Amino acid sequence: MAVCARLCGVGQSGGCRRRGLEDGEEDEVRIEAGPAHSGPRGPRTLLQLPPEILVEIFSSLPGPELPSLAQVCRKFRQILNTDTIWKRRCKQEYGVCENLRKLEVTGVSCRDVYVKLLHQYRHILGLWQPDIGPYGGLLNVVVDGLFIIGWMYLTPHDPHVDEPMRLKPVFRIHLMERKSATVECMYGHKGPHNGQIQIVKKDEFCTKCLQTDYHRMSGGRQEEFRTWLREDLGRTLEDIFHEHMQELILMKFIYICQYDNCLTYRRIYHPLSQPDDLLCPGFFKGTYGSHGLEIVMLSFHGTLAKVTKITGDPNVPACQQTLEIDLTRPVQLPDVEHLRNFDEMSRLVLDVQAQIHREQRLTGSDEEDGREVAAVRGEPGRPLLPVKRPEDKDANKVGAEENDEQEAPAHSFVLPDGVTARSEEYPRSCKMCFYGTGLIAGHGFSSPERTPGLFILFDEDRFGFIWLELKSFSLYSRMRDKFQRADAPSQAAFDEMLQNMQSWTT
Ligand SMILES: [Zn+2]
View 1: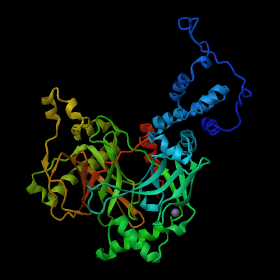
View 2 (view 1 turned 90 degrees about the horizontal axis):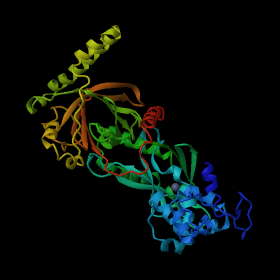
View 3 (view 1 turned 180 degrees about the vertical axis):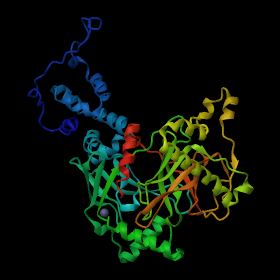
View 4 (view 1 turned 135 degrees about the vertical axis):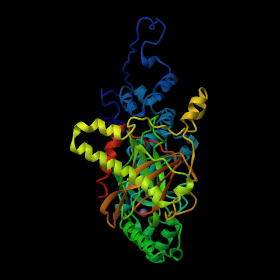
């Protein structure tokens, strides 16, 4: 914050506040050089260096450090007016590669872009979840050319889980004139209009629309509903035959209408990746029956894999942990013929559950039995074989034979009869299966319960889950979008966020 306060003073007419120098008065800044470098003819002070060298030096310093240099003396201040310094800072710190000519037309300098746009709004860059009750969402705020844009990520249309995400801009910030950045709301079909952004506290900000009439349509709510249905869900009223689904969709529309003029966002992190993870953690799209497609986040925690909802529904809201996979409990699938039999598949999973319950009773009755439990469980410390990632292939060329052994062989897969899926288009071979639990609940997240199921790892980008109690199958497919400024600063910070999330929607 102190740095910010200094930076916001750049370019103001205050001059050298630190020493109270008058223009024209030069202050000597000595180079602290050892005897080996201080030859009799070399420059003895920084001020004696040619301006182009100083520009070069200043360009390589972090932007927030520059304002204190401007306070040293008039020469430094003049040199800091060189826009190439700020152009380099914009590029190195925020990836802005726009050409200067475009800026000149609008009369905005690179320093203005750096100070009044990028630095000013740096705290809102990254991934966020809107607080829309149980529905949640995913927002990515990025520097895009000379704009900062908030992109809302919408899932592909149900049930096409492998298709790419759809992006919709919800706000943008730019420099219309030199004075200050302008925030615009992008909702509706009448173009950008006045909005506001307020950083509430660390990792939380609010957007406000100041012209919600731009969201209204001439056909009233009916037209707005139909348009939302078509654009967000890819459907028309006529093609939703299922009465329950109609109800759910209408309920969602009425709910999100409340957030027409004001939305709060909370920061979320992309999970950190470890070399021995079963697959790359990250964001996935998953099928959730009549609730349509939802966004989830896969993360690894020792011997557990957790799948957390980023979007949600009135039964299990966003932020809840939808799946928990026990990576120490692999399930060996039978051949396809036997797999078709639901009871047989179900028995495999329930056997593991019974085993877990037995072990819990043992540890509960006598702590000393810990070792016995470990023996019952088989190989508790057995390292899991990571699925080979494409980028690993070249690196592993040497000793390929050993690695071939590590590659889990593909196993034929088919859904047991009677298990419903949103689509018949699911992979017919898998790498590994594990025991896991899935969270189910009544409307309004009433009586939530973790119920047993089968986690199926298809490949690096897809996994599935069979919900035994619901007799249904969810297919998850990786979001391939790249995110900047989204990684958690540490595993501890990520864990803390996950823990906090649970309280966001309940
Ligand atoms: Zn608006």
